[in-house]
Length: 394
Ligand code: LMR
Image 1 (spheres, rainbow, N blue to C red):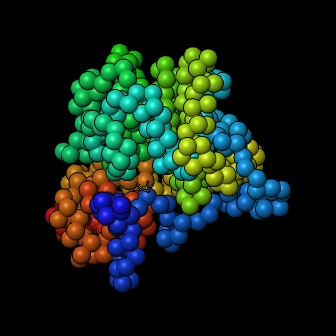
Image 2: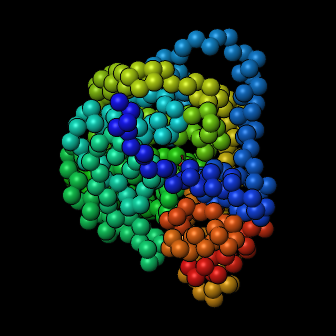
Image 3: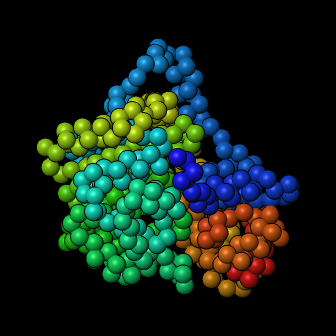
């Protein structure tokens, strides 16, 4: 029967990871997959996470199952981190998932269960795996304008015009902060306008928040998600702990459903439990446990916050260095947007040939749409990248 199978399109980001590994050049630079790296190119285990891991190794008594939605302490801790106190805890149903990708997948499944005809409005561009998962699930997608190629900022008027077509029963997928792949984000006034539009159209927001703390700060990066969740009748939120806790391979994420009508929570919770059971039964616990311990211990939490802040400031410094290097080399401000973008990524506006030339001639790997991972740089490689960008004609 398997002769009917067709080869599936390879994931561009993961393909690039592989190509980088296979490149024998010593001086190659990896600006591809969204993994944080320090100035030496390492992805460290965060101090507080390591400490929690030591404590857990000493105290863990059993490897028996947790609940279908994971440990409730993890949900509480993450709801606090993402939503603060803007919605009552009893209005949020939540389930632990394998990473933020798992949360997206379960969120889409929930939407499809509620309305098989739901159209999911996706930013153009968005994280390619959003599109791939939705396609795999046979769900309808409607792209909305998002990135303005001329300014490398948000095409807000285009976005609002396209989203005016969304209706009750449709879903509008947004990135809560640090838009992936562009790095261009809405300001708070624009988020408020978007909320008003969603209120008018009746479409349901789904927020993917995978980089909280990497943009303007842990609280600041949650502000849009909190606004949406407190103003709209129902909000779906997919949160990832991969990046801000540095626990990529532990697969740690949380799917939340916020309903202003708290009476709906029991049904939402039961549905999330059901979906976990159908797809993988119990979610992984190790990463979730570490996050719960870090967020629940004042000293560990303070240390974790300090380390996230150092990572964020380091990326901002690299952005500023790259923008000023490009200004010097190009004699213009046309790359100034790199310092304005936030998060791990910037789409720099190079075409696929220029991206390919940078890979071929300089061993610099970025995604074909010219998304680069700022954290893949350091003070020494920024000038090399800037030279390569200018040499490519971008
Ligand atoms: C990325 O966008 O590079 C990350 O989210 C990693 C991934 O799984 O694609």
